Image (cartoon, rainbow, N blue to C red; front, side):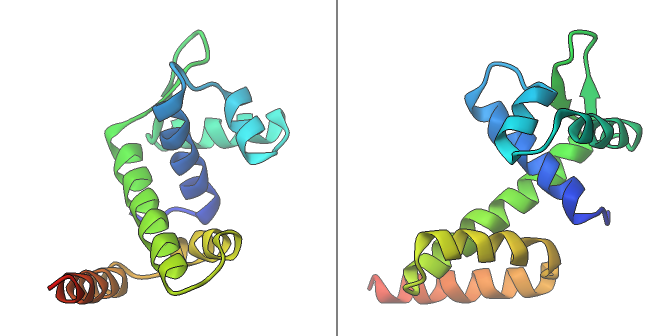
Length: 127
């Protein structure tokens, strides 16, 4: 399940928007990411053709099971890494930007190891 970073960003954005909007449309994604609508339309076409999203006749965008799996993974990484960096003293803007870069290139093995280490340290400090 290897897809490009830009596709992962689109899927994550659809997930985030779907939590706050009744429906997600291309224009919502364009506004959120600061992209032009034609660029988003091309990306949505590619995601649809690859089975990551469905688009209704009304233009509503929904994640498929495959798309949701990727979006959930990227979002979990983003939330965990940005939170961890902030706890280390990194300012919020930098932590968010760095997490966005790291979340796409870190292996599952390394992410799991970091998460387990941090969670173990956090649980140990609570005692």
